[in-house]
Image (cartoon, rainbow, N blue to C red):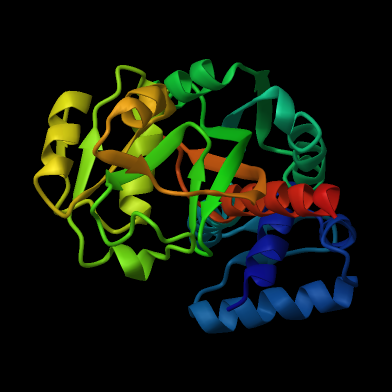
Length: 295
């Protein structure tokens, strides 16, 4: 039994006319007759009483009609669920926040995305960086896109220009100009709290990127500076403490390669947004657009 046979039988049951049912299902009258006969053979019951003037369903045919309609309805529901699972829910809405520096990226990316997923609603919000971070943390936006300056310390450590790394002047890394993550592996880390949620989020992300999350010690800038002077730790803090560090006779900020300063695209998703192929596709389009613009 095929779904096409069910569709043909339902059409016949609704129209009670072989020729009309055949036209509706786009087959010949003789093909429809054979299809119904095959269906009756498979079911083991006579489903249709034929006459020259009309078509009547038997009692079994009326019962089978209701089952056939239910099966076809369920098939349509299943098709819709599969489509939504792959492409996103038809009533889904994505809210994207972005900063001024990303304004050449987000609208273009969203336009390309909507051409592929027209059923997904997109709301774009132009925000200040601090407001963008706040809304993302609260789940008021699903995706945030911003472009921020970064400094390179060596070849594989990239920090937002709002953050600094520093050590005691006696530290083995104090005079090095090319520091890698590998160089930091054997040294514990201090982190300085920030009152700014945006800066604290950057600190947390940088700490995670340096693989220091499980062992880091945190404190105020005074506690961190005191700890560095008594140990072989290195520390991370916001740029607001750069002058304090510079004025301390026993500390030194790790050298950044200013020649490698560049703009870095930062794309983040809220933990509230359901992940799926359509969301991943949008993120991919944003990154591709950013690369095409930078070339």
